[in-house]
Amino acid sequence: MKIVYLPRTRADLRWMKEYYTQVFPEGARYARRRFQNAEQLLKDNPQAGRPGALSGTRELVIARTPFLILYRIQADRIEILRIWDGRSFRQLSPTGDPS
Image (cartoon, rainbow, N blue to C red; front, side, top):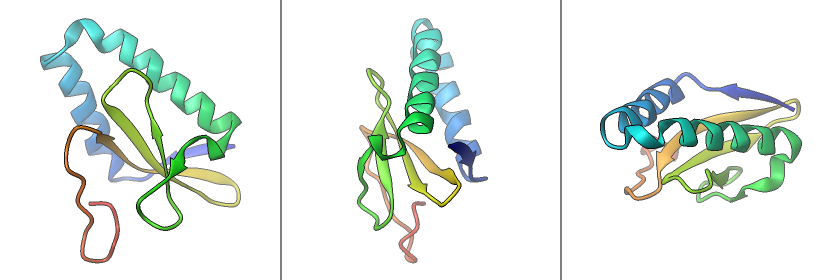
């Protein structure tokens, strides 16, 4: 199944890269591999993540990192909604969308 990153995930990916560049540079390559493994897992098994807090979403923890992928499954693709640091408070917008 095809993975599509929604526009708002660009900032999340930049933040994740910045985190590893500034806070934990020695873990960057390892985290990149873990992220790629998570993408492949979703392609092969879209139901791999646990049900998300928002109706119709799922969450996949990126193994051995503090990050998780919030996504939804559409007929022909997997839409990545957000990439969150699991240690932080996640807030939803007034419309119920991940913000």
